[in-house]
Image (cartoon, rainbow, N blue to C red; front, side, top):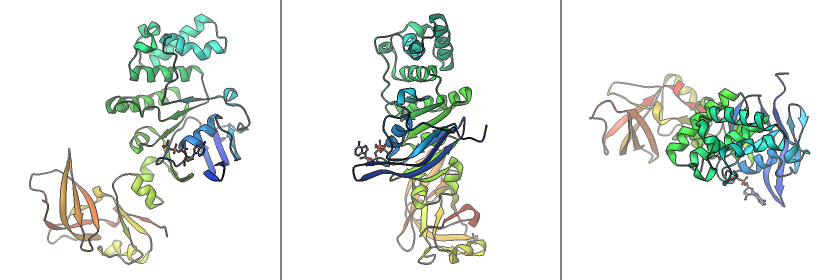
Length: 348
Ligand code: ATP
């Protein structure tokens, strides 16, 4: 039954006394999907995942796993598994004993347990000798891999992750991000992954759910959220962006041709910094503006410019670093882009 979602939330809510942490939430997760849940601190991500794994009871609504209601089933009876930031491994036991722990609970015979543990070590790209190594002799990254192997040994229907990489250093995090995505593809399991890092969510997931103050603001693949955010909050959350409120007229913008359509539609016009280019003296664009460069920053292959518009509004543009004589602070210039490179957020 491919069309029954593996996980479904119907009007799920959570209140603490008179504070509503989660407003009624609806969600469907596809079997085998990698869904990232992203949002600023305090928006309710941890509360949501605690409800999903059964560490907390909902105040209303329901949770369904493959069409069966699970919100009344205790956490230890649910076919789901949580991978935490704090690893909860047994530090004085061996890697093998840690991975085999769930299988021991299920009374799997020792030989079959060891076979599975070695398979999981290989899947997580840990050397076979690590089977006998003690956890407190493993590095942070190795422990994270062991924790993942142990989670997979449970053979859960869904793996929930609560910021599992946030305590690791930048390079290791980047490596494990890619490994997690690989692991997701190789196992075909459903992953629901909480993070406050949008970058992490974009690298790994099939879809991103952006949360704000106890609600889903937008749920879509990363590319769609980036190009067509449904609110200014999402647009700003998805990286550097220039937003122009069209309700007071187009202000600093000169609109021609297809750009004119924005003059008559109220809302917020979004222009990403990388969509803007410098216009030559005789060059025109459907959307253009005069600007003065206030600062420049090197981003490796690209340059980022802070500019101010005639009204005093500050904007950002990003250009490829093609030659040394790009614009300098103090220079006046014109910037432009095609109407098709912009997006209108139709919000009030
Ligand atoms: P962070 O990224 O900082 O971990 P979060 O998105 O995971 O944040 P939650 O921990 O889910 O946020 O908290 C959501 C809101 O619910 C916060 O305002 C928090 O203060 C509140 N909250 C969470 N747990 C409780 C509780 N047990 N009692 C009262 N309020 C709570």
